[in-house]
Image 1 (tube, rainbow, N blue to C red):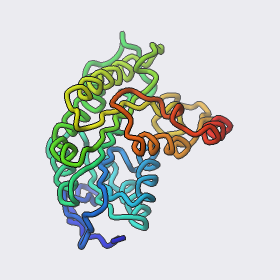
Image 2 (image 1 turned 60 degrees about the vertical axis):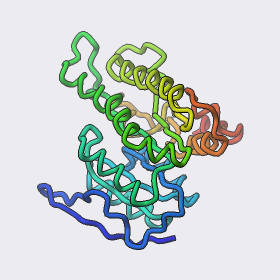
Image 3 (image 1 turned 30 degrees about the vertical axis):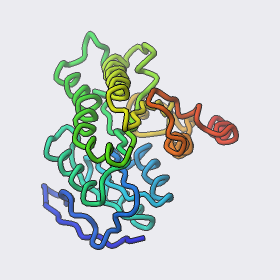
Image 4 (image 1 turned 45 degrees about the vertical axis):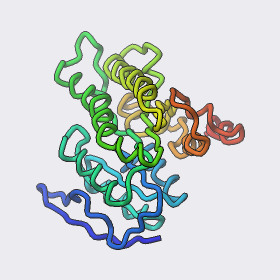
Length: 268
């Protein structure tokens, strides 16, 4: 599998940021292509690893260029990777992601993983700054929908899938989770409607469960979350969903795990 890269770069302050498209030289477009947002750490990186091990070509993004470059370097040992640093709420950045996927042969899978809590600790709705709430919805709802719109022609062509990362906070009212939960509830509902309107594409909202991630730590600043499962423990559930091409709908990753894997995750 080709692991040679050819990147165009631009400097922003002290960071070197990969720019759009610029597919690795000689990349083979016979592999299925996945676009994964927020893939420099946590669940996004774990899913990227799982797909890379299966031979998927990847287009990944994150806001932090340094951490994204480290993720790309790791994944390049397994597959072709185009890494583009940027913000999913930016129109140009989303267009760059779509262009990169097209140059690799077209996306068969989109994972809308990038998310925002809206603050750490998360404010109560009565005190939630409206600008921060607007940004939370921009990241968690509008950006996934906009990127899905851009990639739909590619996804339709390949009979592909969209995974929108959800949360139990989308269906259960938790004190302090109003902004994040409401945004994920909106994403769930939009996913369900997309699933009805796009019969050629599977649209899944997937609740990964509570995991040992930086976002979860930010939700509980100062607390010990080391008892939570690592993100990699739920990847087999996502891969099963893709393998079985289940109908569009809402799923819990834990319900898709083989019993032995689910038991190990609970122990972890």
